Length: 353
Image (tube, rainbow, N blue to C red; front, side, top):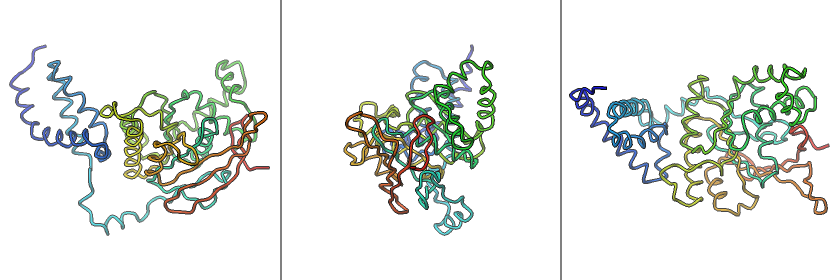
């Protein structure tokens, strides 16, 4: 392939000034974890990381194309809203959508979930963080709210199985186990329940967006969020992350401590939540006392912290069906507590009998 060097030089010269300005901003972000979160479009940062490799390989055509795409994206990004006065921004809030609520069966009455604030849901392993999230997502989809679910442990099929379980119990009062749903999907047309599962997925896949990729960073999650928002034409009301300790660190802080990595992830997600009004539900392995540095960093950036607790029988080692939901932090409301029943067979949450 013959390269038009004159045209290439002209293109590089044309973009050099803008490139230097953008490079300066990104270098500042690269050197400061806090500054990374100012980027409303994290994909700009990801593209910047590819440029040296393209240059070294003498892939000039793609270098210029990538640089041009970066600058076009940069022109669309708003780093700070300096064009509007405080009064104008307050007036813009008129007509904003109302706060969201927890499902009624959680018994957290009058506990608002304010848009634009992260919610950390913490518990020890096996207590029911994912069950909590699945029940919230089913309640959201019935209200026609969009949910983006980052599943770091389960496959997309497994998440749909759990959603179908809870839906059957909550709205049809029919019991079905997780294993049974998987077996029905495996056998397909052989079982009469198969068309019902297909209809369920067909009806609700427009509101539920499941990402089951491994080793995603917070920046990559933000890029996926933006793609999802473009696809559905609006920002999803809920973003679930199951769970936040499995989020990969940004490339620039690979060698930092776990605490610094979690801190950076938390700040990036908080920034995106604040700028878009979406509620980020961050499932996390934390305990009630916040014994780890990671849990303290997550709590600092959260608008609400919810802790799940279950008693364990000392003799049998079995967990109680009763789960305490404690709202330990609520930036714009009261702290409270409720007791609910987790149905281990169907994955649904209900009132304690």
